[in-house]
Length: 174
Image 1: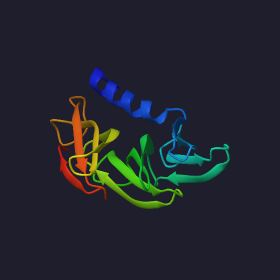
Image 2: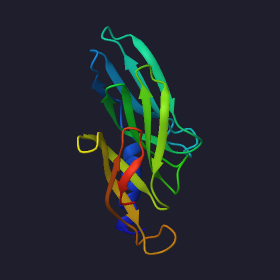
Image 3: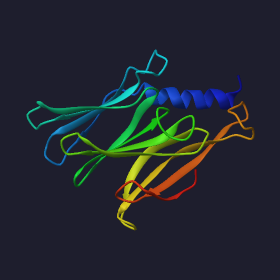
Image 4: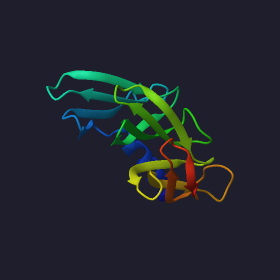
């Protein structure tokens, strides 16, 4: 196996092994997020878990996001009316792995989700607000291959997706 394939595999599994990450919320509480059931496994039970705790450290709600294959989290962004959960999925979308964005309301209920990507792997890593269009910018990596299937000649390039507040892609390079 060549180094580029090992690098891509390493990037994939690094995302699955991330420990619980926490962000403080605007109401003084804490949001914890992590992956569950990913390793060691075949991916069929790999899901994203979001837990919202009050200022007093009581569990307010818990949301589990995922389908019947690999679904794992990269980051969460608090927005005015809830949270944007950025991850990657092979349960939904157009190809192997696609960028997965879910909007949760302030009570942890899913409002919508979208996937972004092409046939090869697409990895969303960060999401930031964009004043330019009152939306968001997703950045990450996209896999490029010179053959119709994933092979040892594949490599990663920067991925950029500009979305509006409803998650509709306005501009992308996947």
